[in-house]
Length: 577
Image (cartoon, rainbow, N blue to C red):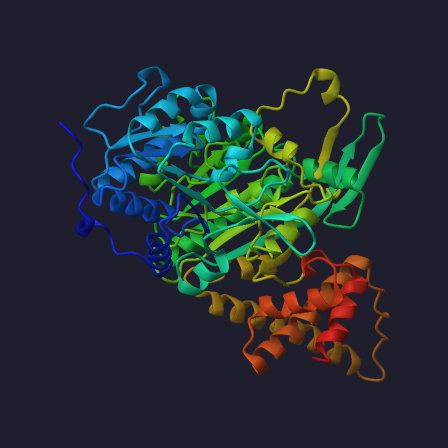
């Protein structure tokens, strides 16, 4: 029996961006269409509506969805079935064709790369719409890219979807259009774009607060030399990597202190209107993931779910966690782009991966909004690369071909290492030994701005930020953080005035100790944020746009990782605007 044509009237109402993109798609009726939409915006619903339209008017007879992982195959098939489109998630290359009672199949990029001729024959047999989910994966290797291109060139229509339309390499993405810019470089071009900033404005996604933790770290090098560094301070990339690795060591104090803070934040959200809120710890490798799960149990008294990519039943465990009220999930690879666990609201970024692609995919797990006012909180090491990425959450990126590579630490090899076990030999392990690490809340990043002063873990100052209300709009988050910072500045001024007003006969107060570079940077960040807030109240411009304008005028990275000189220049500039 042939599959029935889906009924459009049964589809859920479309969001504004989905309606606009659908109208654009039906108006153009071109072979290729690329839609970029932030995680949580509803790319799946949009794509299935297009599939239903094309099946209904006879433009296509079959649908093939290509997804990055086996877990997402099942997720796509279930979503399609809910709107009357039957897709075979169990299709294997040896099957050659789907059964007649399916509209088509869901396959992975790996499947297509292994046997592109099978999928080419399927595509040529019936007029086919191909939906390429997270299309940037088709540039992961020559085999995948060439396979996708060969298999789906005969398709009547191709719909490319992605939430992260950029890569760190020059591998072109099949079926994506590139245009040459004024600098001579080729940039990917999307037919529909709905970024995080747009979705945040519309209330489609949650505001994300990044709580960055620094702290003192000590480790022993392969030469037996003991080194110490403060996480987040300017240093060479090698030292940053070693301090970062030391902080993430399950046997140290940094991770337990950060996990305790993250669990406290999760409790606040659960008590403030998100009773099923869940947390996700993203680990670098499987051994560390298991160690983090033990820490969670020791700290909270409740077991954490653990999902490892090569475990049988990993997809089932994700589904079980998504439908439960369990507090914590620890994962390495499985909980990545496209995986849908809407109740995730607190994250701990405990991985060494720092590519823009991986970071965006990871943060995308927490932004899906279910009802107005929900917020997300992500705890992360105070590492320059990560602080920059957190400050640029709203930045839209394109895939650029031919751009000179910079030594910025954004290496796709980090992503690859983060997605497999650490296979270091015993000899390599002897080269490095983490000795100790302590955690300290360094700053809170929101909307491109940095708020707060350093606060030791477990102190009332830290609790003020962990206890922020759980149900807030983006504007309310900005106002509240600005108010907290203003209160901190006022308290400091009061203490200074009290010291100055001491009686003449009173013992002279010791002169204030000169500020360290770290203290000076914190003070300048506070001053800059206060000036930006003042300009926001005068002009109505969002904080993020004012910070972006200052970066354009003065150059340099986001304020979370700017130098003292850069912060001083921005303070002088904003005073003249």
